Image 1 (cartoon, rainbow over the protein chains, first blue to last red):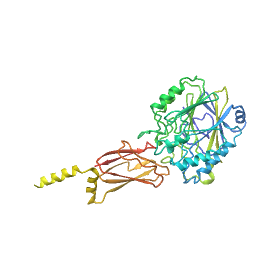
Image 2: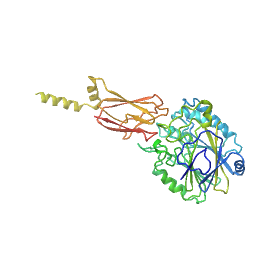
Image 3: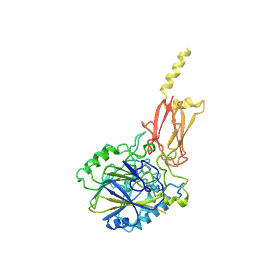
Length: 313
Length: 114
């Protein structure tokens, strides 16, 4: 297993090490399950030109949060979408990997939906975070943002040769446990993947990390190993998550896992401090360097996906 | 005679519903209240033993919201508790009440009512 983050040189072996936050964007190339990092210039620009399509991941907007270090999460979400709109290659769609809101309130969902209209993209796909399903098991979230393919809210779609799967791992959580996919969703996933050839690039996205990133803080999913066993046979699998408000990566075989930054506030690196939660002490002038978006480019005919994380500063 | 009267009172009490019993027992001494703090994604104290009729009040001291949820659906779940929000449950019946935060399920606690 290899873990990397947004501030390490390629190939540097680290196990759940804390990362530096700030820094220029990095282009991530995934080839055969191995990550290579490049600066956003030179080769990176060439890769961007070769890309057949791009999409952008944003996460953890927490509309309704209004405390240190971010009293105005609506404006930082707007700034993220402005970055999306400024991309040279227009993304085909957006993925929002959950925690749209802080407390699942209708007015928070209203605000989020209004701001998201500022993104100049044709389509946004959403999966809920645990903050989006409080009190109603996600009924309001799914009514507004669901794809309505399956009763449980999970879904899949194909886009230019890449198979995308949106999973729900924030419902029916058990006391003492982590995130949960559940037997019904796993059975659906098995069926959904069955007809695909092993050479199909697969992108899986869900809110909570689909690997044991840091279970002591609840950063993992109880039955993620079962889902990964269904994905093992594919040559290229990318798993995109949110939840932890920082970039972490790991590789297991041909499956590469990535967590994204938040558009609202950072959380501490795993195990740094007594608990997760907003990093209250980030000064206002430094906040933007902790927030950002992720662009993913796919080169047709290649198994590689290029990931670019951009900070908001 | 005394023993008989005691038995009669007991049987009368048994006929009453649980709420009435709670009202009866809490009429003389003031209802006990005890606090549970939610801090750093944990309940403090994590396990507590209280007398029947005690009102338990949870207060969220975290920046993150939490949701008090009974593991066995023995009491009504709280709404989302934002920072400084409180939630109270009066435990009138003896038993062991396991609970957790429904959005951070690694947060678990127990109220033992004697």
